[in-house]
Length: 184
Image (cartoon, rainbow, N blue to C red; front, side):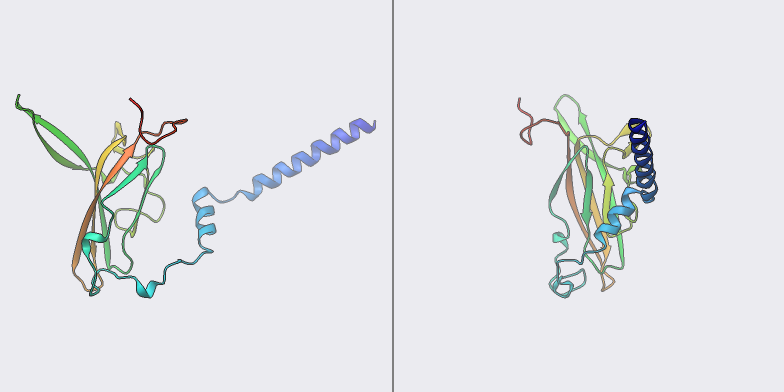
């Protein structure tokens, strides 16, 4: 009888704990991260940041020349603060070979519309944050490893337009790989 009581009590306690845990998970992962991050202040003194329209601002320094992103990760890039507007455009590079001379040319295809942006991020926001595995180039083609171009255009606090661009290198995530590059 004592064993049944202990087993029954243990089972009831386990169900209670499971129900309590499930009821406490009312937020999605984005809300939990935002709640966590909102408790911290920026480490940078905002008064010393040079923004578009300020005297010493250099528009070709808004973005680094290149970024490397895992095929299982996210593209996370932020534009300068204090702009009137933001416009991000994400391009796929399409290469064309012409004739037997192996002349190669390229064109850019705007694929911004197919990106899976995080909440409160996007092509017209200060933060460009897109999840690579669920982003699409078009209906039948997923975003895959390769080289892409990201273009940023902002209107500064002086009303003038500033532009910069960078290369985004999406590499194939290989689990168990000891180094960044695959050995041949």
